[in-house]
Image (tube, rainbow, N blue to C red; front, side):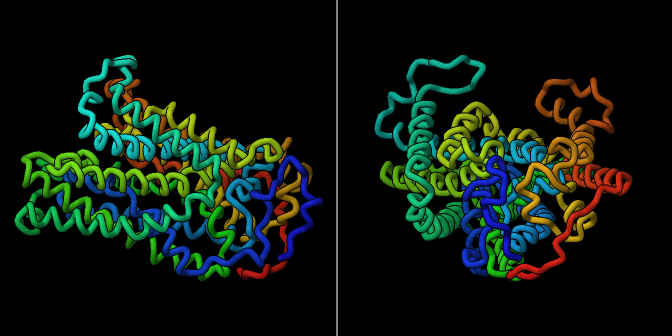
Length: 499
């Protein structure tokens, strides 16, 4: 389909970043999408994802199976939402206008953007803490600096200084633009697999072979205890990439064909996540054999090596690869989301700065201080927000609109996607209803409510947050739209990419 000229689009709803990608610019092949997921999966949070399951009590095979299942499940909405991007060349915020309205789309876009800010903060903390572990070897006084921040913040002065330094480096890259990160992405693509294999070799050697490492049993005393940990962990695994399952059109809009993005993602996501997680599983299990207790943070583990030069090299590499991941994964998408609010006022650079500030305000050092906070508070918590959005968008595109969109109308304040003042009440109501059942369990998880204050069955719903929200919001949205008999615009044409 050939989109209408940009001059026909309302200025407040478009910009060069939000306009449909023309066919000539759709150059991403199967290999590009597979490489994207390999690059995205090879990051420190993926390692920590696996090691947190071991720290939580799972055996090695239970952890890997949980990760594989979670990534196979999230692949489905990834492929479903990706089709619209590949067909029409539109990014996630614009696709959300079909279901939420041209103004209402700011709601899911901002929720998605805020979560990206959280990931930015976590990645920045990891990179900054790696630099601290290196610096404290050469300047031991960093570890004994007077406490500057309130005790309740849990933030020591030394790590805070290096966190701030690394944060500033990220903001400088945002100032330079995305092109400045290309060389770092190439470095990461070559270095991290080598570093992962080296760490795996060290674990096998120091742990006296794979036998003693993989022989570590599950720590759960009963089957009920295992299932109580498994289901929220599975939800957390789905939640890990729930952000990308929504804004994957930001990437598939550049696909040369539907097959390219579908095959590339199917080959790249579950396999690369599971394989790199295996390194985290083996190394974390090995730390119990070697040290007598598990060390789930690879940065903390690397700091225990005896050679200052080896530790310094490892920490610099972690920081550089984290910088590359942060810009690619956690700046591009929220910049689009923030730009959707005011395309003529918010540029990529402004969106990047806003992401950086919000990323600090979520206190990322607290989120990853322990595995329970990482899984139950962060991953499961934000999946409760993203599951309902995914359910609404997929139901809208496949069941309501039958994969037919009027693209020019997505950029107009009046028309079929205007609904009521630019907001679709059905989508907003379904979103609220999809989130609501998970709120009590979330409040218990963060300690705002005691377990006794919430009906146990209601609190347990939170363990299935993404699934509950996805099904409930999607089902309600379908019913409301059918009952309202809202007219469904179609173009009746097939674009250059094909259906």
